[in-house]
Each structure stands twice: as structure tokens, then as C-alpha cells.
Image (cartoon, rainbow, N blue to C red; front, side, top):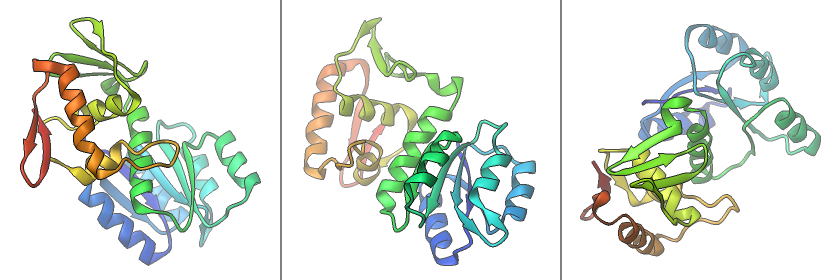
Length: 219
């Protein structure tokens, strides 16, 4: 599934950087510079996620959010407005996240992945990888109907492979996907350890292939 993302951002430099980054992650991104452009895009396309700048030439990102209220599109605000009142109002109105500028690209990509994992609907509520079944709603994985005893990071690692079956994942992509919610990034030199532990728990049920010098792939 190629996720469709709406980016509403009038700053050319920020927008061009984000467009490049999201295209590298194989997202289908539509860029709009104003509410008028966004209104047209929303009327023609169903997006899984919208990234909205709060301050736009013809209004605010909140106005775009209102246009999305009756859709399944998740919303992340990207803004320089670091005000507690605005942040609270954004979450109360249903925003999935609120990120202040300047932000770290790796962190943004990790948050986007996390939000998309929750908005994929029924197609993502049950995933399979080899002989393993993953209940993403409950956050549990089963092998032969037996609950796997996985740590939070091992589960996120398993979910990353299940969501990208057959695709080569670089170490950098994997590290971004298992970014810790507390704000701590998993160290690169510990990724090998987590994969080793996951392999031990999965046994022969899932084949995690090492692609030397590149990353990992699970078919």
C-alpha cells in the first residue's frame, strides 16, 4: 500500500526538503501552498495523512483540518507556534500529532510512520509474516496461536518487517521505524542485537534475511 500524504506548506525550502524525503520513503505526496489548493486536492483525493502548516497565506492549517473532519485522514500540524493553548486545541480537535519547527527529519518520519500504522484501517489491523500473526489493534503477535513474548522494541521491529514484506530495508529506515516514543533513538550498533533476539524468538517461522552491506529483507 502506497500511502497518500497531503502536505500544506507555503515555505518553498521546507516543502522541497519534505517532498524529497517522503518520496525517498515511497510515499505518494501532494503539495499545496494554500487552503484553496488544499481544498481542491481534498475534493479529488482520499489521503491517509495530512501535514499542515498552521500559518498559511489565506488562513490557518486549522481551516484545512476542518475540511478533513468527516474523512479518515489523520492530521499532523507542523508549525512555529509553540503555544500550549494551540497545542491543546489541536489535540482536542482530533490532531494525531503537533510538531514544532525546526524539527528533526528522522523524528518527523518516525512520527509519520507511527500515525500511518494506526490509520490503515482493517487492512492493517491483522498482519501476517511467515507463520506469525500480528494483531496491531491489541499490539500482540502470535505463533501457532501462542502469544509471543516480545519487548516493545522487538514488536515494533516485527511490525516494521510485516508492513514492508519483500522490500529491502536499510538500517537507517529500520532505526527510524522503531524510534522510541520517549524521544530516544535506538543506537545503530544495538540493532543487530535486537534482530538476533527477534530471530531467536521467531525460530524458523520467519526468515529475516541479511542483505550484506545494505540492510534486511523479509519475504
